[in-house]
Image (cartoon, rainbow, N blue to C red; front, side, top):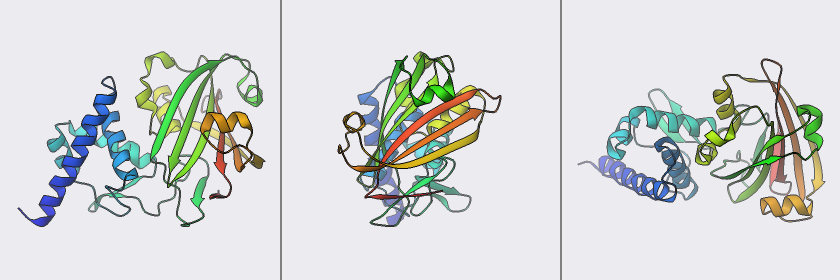
Length: 256
């Protein structure tokens, strides 16, 4: 066996162990979600570094005893996040300087210390129902609302995000939470609804982080943050979401 073949086997073994840990943590999650989160943790922990090539899809499927479609779907979701690059003839590599562009948000963050695009490698999500009115009411109309609250992190930087959806837009009870972790949430919801987002509206302000948001997102109260408000509609004209994003202004720059 060649050195390259041995290295590939070792990487597959590491992914397999992380996959087992992930499925042990949440036996209900799909194989696709377990693989996606296992690969995200491997990228986050430096098992795969920027520019590294992942094992071929067919080999991953065989070694991990997964259907080829499961592997392809998991890799596609990581590509949507900007964490990997898939090119015909070159295989799949961990992204180095790929911008996290419009496919993720309508803007992108860049890390000041490295001048590289921010790569989000961890996401925790909780789902709530709310009748509370707020800035989102102007766009979505009266509640109730579905609230998708996320704590995102990557490159040692934490970001908070709250997405408000009309309460009757989707049946959130039918969705396993792990399906929403570590995905491009907008793309995932578009697939569930069979519609695309359109007419994006984005506003940015520099604010002092309020105690409520600091507690919710485990950030520093009183810190200077980018407060990004993004709104979209569906292609049939219905309001899609209102999203508030909080990102540390001393660690990131914001680009459109």
